[in-house]
Length: 413
Image 1 (cartoon, rainbow, N blue to C red):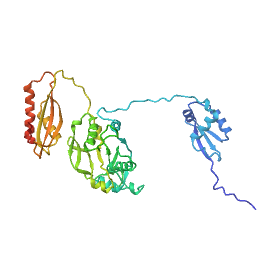
Image 2: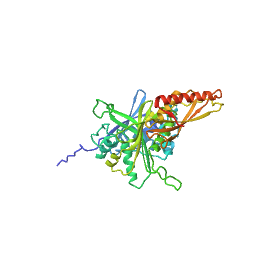
Image 3: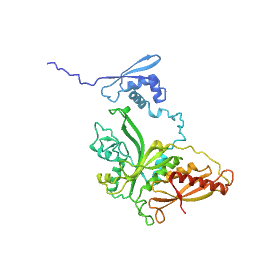
Image 4: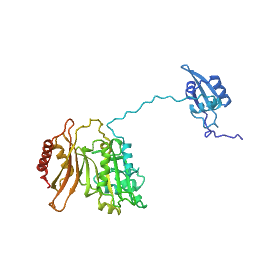
């Protein structure tokens, strides 16, 4: 009786081409072709040779039991092993390096991160996929992109704001006895382009933002520290310090403006040259209740492009002549803001006005309940001569007249 053998599942013999130039390039040494022939013979690798356009090539058949020999690099590894690693030359890699260009008008985002860390914040990294309910609560005016195959129900949409991830991280920390939490994150936010559908990259708008959340005491617990809780102006001060890094803080303005996720009485839009680039404020109490949060949370969010646009620094000679300061206190309506008064003063003043500061706000006895008193310090200086009293008085009069015309202001006696 004749026995039949099924050879259909036997391993096939692999044939690999090896170029002599490739051996030299990879190992960094020219090995004689006869030496390579000898190595293949010692390894029991059947090999034949051919020449193609002056290129010496081996056609190597790897034994079936050597399943690790599949490509040209595997043959070169075997040659180097038999030839001897100690016989291979050692060479220092050589590369042409050049410094990357960096615009002087662009502030490094790492500089912004370091600044926030210096003010007591911790950087967080959250997922770009967030919970639908959290997203709808914190950014209801945006329609998020829904994932076709989400990782979980809590990660079913792409974020349109960084707030959902940060708020979730803040809650996680507070639930673990961390009473003072300050977190920030920079990252991309995603939205569907108008009149577009689908998840193709061309249909999705990506905007990089910088956001933060704050809650708890203003300072770390200490015997000498005030235990008061953080408020709106603390967070606003943090943002102003970041904007000051750009060298053009005067182009930014905080304008009282509502946001669906923020308390209507403690929220503001951050505007640059009249364009809104972010928001800051207290989380709306209704959303706090909806998310089962039992403590006040302050949030801010800015577009990164606005934060990193830096003014090119330049030097100016310091005046050798004395500066003169005049303080005025004006009574204006409650609705008038310090930013509006500042802009009015800058427009009305001459180029001798070097600085102005709001150093006091008073409401109470002697002031109409519907009005308030703002005390402003005005500093005058000329670069080439000493200013006279008449010149300074004339500048102050122009400022007061402009405030009277625009805000109905009156000087406080």
